[in-house]
Each structure stands twice: as structure tokens, then as C-alpha cells.
Image 1 (cartoon, rainbow, N blue to C red):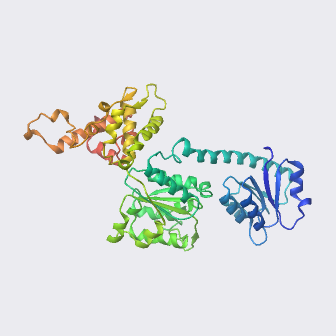
Image 2 (image 1 turned 180 degrees about the horizontal axis):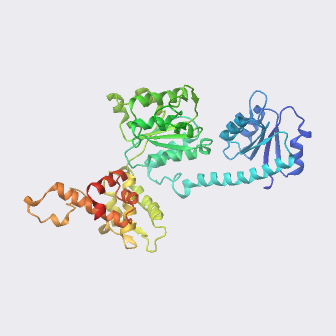
Image 3 (image 1 turned 135 degrees about the vertical axis):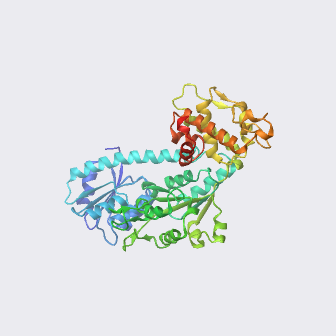
Length: 467
């Protein structure tokens, strides 16, 4: 057993000197706190952040042991709760584990069994503490919770995220252009929120799932609810219970489904498709969009009441062109990712190359920069990337880009066909990406900053598989 742990025991209506407390004091080197009811137990948890393990009865005066667990873990995410309950009630076992309990012990209990469970629980607590400390240290070692940024605008956003994560409630609306890292911010908010970070982070891309399937994905359905529903299925709302539901591209959600989501946010209940039974839900919703939802509300394509429910805490992610000083830091991070396993790894970019990149407008934002670094790690042979090694669009400070078909520059005007030349250049880029990735279409799509479905359609339509 770890040295000198701190344990809180909650036992109602018993003399602590003749109970489990006395046994633990005798058999362990632990510092034992004792509480006879939930109010006293929670007071101790709030006052002493060093309590590592909670051992509580399920049935207590006024409140159940589950409330101590929920509020205790919310206050101290590293707390490891163990529940003592009568045997045979599977419902309460499941509820205890969902509330955050590490283990349960049936009554009448065996003291040696309790010692073994406590020992394992304290070892788990040590690992949990290390994990939480590691997540906290991410800000120092790898940006802010994995988000890279040293610019003033990013530091301001980090402060907002810190304030948001101090509480486990309050829906968040992330706005920003495509490629600015909205899902990364949503994941950071979940990971840094005590209590919720012990449960699921469930992402849903509202634009990627067909409209007729999105409702069943979110709400789930009962067996026989529609043709093909041969069994009941839990929706993503239930999978996000106690955790976070991330609704990406919320602006693409259709009006009918918007009304149902509004009820979820207002009443914290929903019904699976085909069911008349309401299910209570405790989730934080983080929504993201690259649309102007204010304009969508005025146009009548997005519900105003849902917009206000989602945007309790609005956060706007800056585009890369407004945080150009972060480009060297981002490149360093991406090189670390894509250089793994390479013998001739790229070490850095020259000042001239960085200057060229800072003069670019970055319509694809951080995602476009990440794809550029990945492309260079695959295709570039040198230790350093110079300005001449960059793609053509980065080589000019201003003005229109040169025609990518270099061989066409000297062609007479009447022989130029913009459509066919564009397709020809696209085909060459696609083939180059496919060859570079050994025909791994998913990786090729990522390299080209293109949706995989779009790439597959182009390959099939243009018979590039035969090339």
C-alpha cells in the first residue's frame, strides 16, 4: 500500500472506534477521516484536497453515497471512490460506476477484501494523479493542452478556455474559419474540465452524416422504430452522458432537428426514436461552425432560440493570417510529428522560407500549413526547407499565381484551354500524392487537403487507378 495515504470513510450511525475506521487505522499507515453523513463528508472533501480515496455506504441519511461521489469527483478529479452496498442490485452497481466509483463492495463485507480493494484503488489513484498532472503540464511542454500558439490573440483565447473549464456547465459555441482547429479546442475544453473529463468526448459532424441518419445517430432508436431497426441502439447523446457532446458544423443541421436539440438543451431530456419514455441527460454541448450564425438567424435558416442556447460562451478562433508569429512554432510541432521514423528528417525552415510563408494568406489556415509540412516531409530530400523548395503559390509576394502548367506558358493563346489544363494539373497532383503514399487514398486525400470521398470520385471518374 502507498505510504501515508489519506482516506475518507463515511459510515452513518456507528461508533467509529469500533468500526471500519478503527480497523484501517490499525492495519494501514493511512490518515483516516471519518464522516457520519453526506454533508460532513463533502465539507471534508472541499477542505482537504489531499484526500485520495473515499469509502462510503450507498445508503446514507438525506442523500445517497452517489451524490458524495459526483460532487467529490467534481471537486477533486483524482479522488477514487469505493461504494459499500447490499448485494444483488445491478441497477445501483451500474449507477455507482457511472457516477465515478472505482469499485463496489457487497455487504456483509470481509475486512481483508476491503484492504485489497483499497490497495488497488490507491495504486489507481497514483496513476490517475500522474495522468492529470501530465495533462496540466501540456500547456508548458506542448502549447496549451496540445494547442500551439504564442501570439497575443491565442493567449487571450487560452485565458477564456481556462475560465470555461473551471466549471462543468455552460454550452460553448466555437466560431471560426475551416481549418482553425475547432475540434482541438473542443477536446481541450473537455480534457481540462474536472468531472466531465472522466467521461466520454463524443464528436458528431452534422455535415458528414446524411440528414435522415443524423437524428438516429444523436438520439438512438428502439427496436422496430423503422424498417431495418432490428435492435435498439443508444444514440450519441447517451454515450456523452456526464461528458461532452461536440456538434461540429452545427450550421448544417436541418430545422426539424434543431427543434429537438433545443428541447435537449432546455429540458435536459430526450426520447429515442420510437420510444415514449423520456431519458434524462447531463452533458455539456460544444458546437462549432464556420458559418455566420447571426446571418443564418436573420435569414431564418437557423433557430434564434437554439443559437442563444448554444452560445452561452462564444469563442472565436483566429485565422492563421491573424497569428503569423505562430507559424514557426506550428512548423516545429508538425516536423516533430511527421519526422518520426525518418532517417533524413527535415530539421527546420530557413528564414527566407518562413518569410514567404508569412506573406501568404492561408485560406486553409492551420490545416493547410500542416498539410504543407507533411507534403515536404514526404517529398523533400534536404535537411532544411528553403524558399525555393516551397510550392509555386508561396514564391510570389503578391499578384496572381503563375499558371501551374509551366509547359503552357509559351503556348499561343488559341491553344490554351483553361478547363482541360486545370483537370490535367489536378490529375498530376493526385497521381503524385498517390505514388507518394503507396496508393493509400486516405493519406493521399489528407496530403491534398481534400475530402476522401471527393478524391475517390475524381479517381473513378478520370480512371486514374489505371494510370
